[in-house]
Amino acid sequence: MASGAADTRPIPVLAGPTGVGKTAVGIELARRFGAEIVSADSRQIYRYMDIGTAKPTAEEQAAAPHHLIDVVDPDVRFSAGEYGRLARDAIQDLATRDVPALVVGGAGLYIKALDGGLFDAPEISPAVRQRLANEYRSATTAALHGRLRAVDPASANRIHPNDRQRIERALEVHDATGEPLTSWFERPVQSRSRSRRTLLVGLRRDRAALYAQIDARVEKMIESGFEAEVHGLMDRGYGPGTHAMSTLGYAEMLRYIGGELDLKEAVSAIQQRSRQYAKRQLTWFRQTGGIEWFTVDEGEDPAGTCEQIIRSFPDLLF
Image (cartoon, rainbow, N blue to C red; front, side):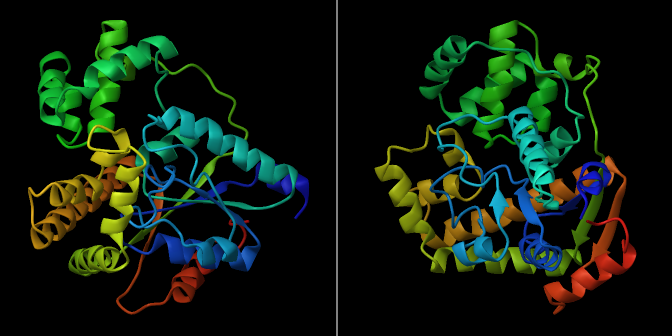
């Protein structure tokens, strides 16, 4: 592929809810076209969190090189804006090497950030961020969400009560600037250089089949050693107060390890929260619009889904 084509063709983005099969289809597409994958997953950026985030295995990453996986430690707050900058840098680096890029992930905010559509977030000094992080550490997630509801009810309604990382980020903006995060959303975004557009390709399944797939994947995570992974994170000093450890699956396993839940209850809670997350993702993508959807039928292998996508975009993909 000529370098000119690399600079002007749209960047294909393979999106969809958790559990729909994006990883396998993305790897198959990348393998066929010699592409490298830029992850758009909001938790796979964390090191040491492999099983609970369904991170691509070493074998899968060998089949198709991945970028923006294992970027930061679990106690680092990582924003969508930071993701957007790193993703654009990775894509530009691939373009200079004449290597096609394929973005794969279900984090709607990350995909929006890549496309240059996020609000202009306020600059907060590292010293202030650290001071506020120390302040928040002593509070429970429920207490922080309650405080957010008092100062920024719109953000509190939008952010799940267990999503400690996003709760702290919204509080941080309010406490550092005196203005709620939602007021920053309403400000006009400064112009950005956008030399390439995105081509959004979405995967979806029948709702019942998707939920069954999600439930089975959670059970497989347990069988693969998810509990041991969480113990290992705790041994590294990452406990309930750590940003990433309040996310889906890890929070429930911490409650199991702490004796609040038995294993069956923890698995059921992870499954339920995963299904709820998938539903929110689908809602986000429907509201986003501009996505070409492909239905993954029961029993269809990734190669079959790839054929559907390639037939629809014979000249646009890479």
